[in-house]
Image (cartoon, rainbow, N blue to C red; front, side, top):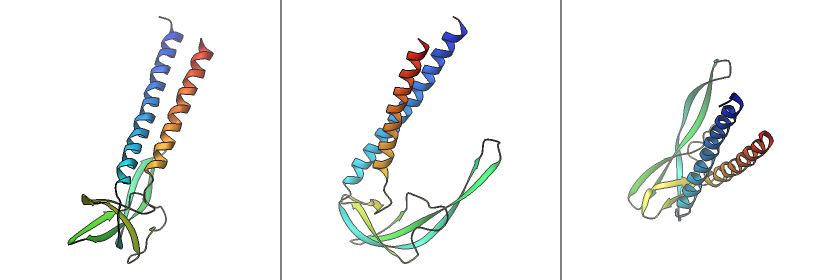
Length: 149
């Protein structure tokens, strides 16, 4: 087997794996968005705390980069049960919500601990982006395959 054929096979396998990852991620977020549609009960909660988390990553030159993300803890009560929900999305500079601020929370009527904060749910957007990237990667792989044939 010559080197060019081996390279083409490896390239297509690698591209196929990336495409599969995009589609699996997209379907995961679609399922999550569908599940969150069942969160039909609405309640108001208060922000009780803002938490800063540091995440360390490395750039292309292996230099450490530390980013600080703010998350808010929101407390809400359903019947006699008090629940606490953390925001899904962290913000970089300042917390999105002030302590004591009232927020709208949607929860599952069968389990009040399953919830999301209004404005903090982006599962559908992530699903669309992942699926579009998967489609583009298929098109890209097909164009590469045609060009090397």
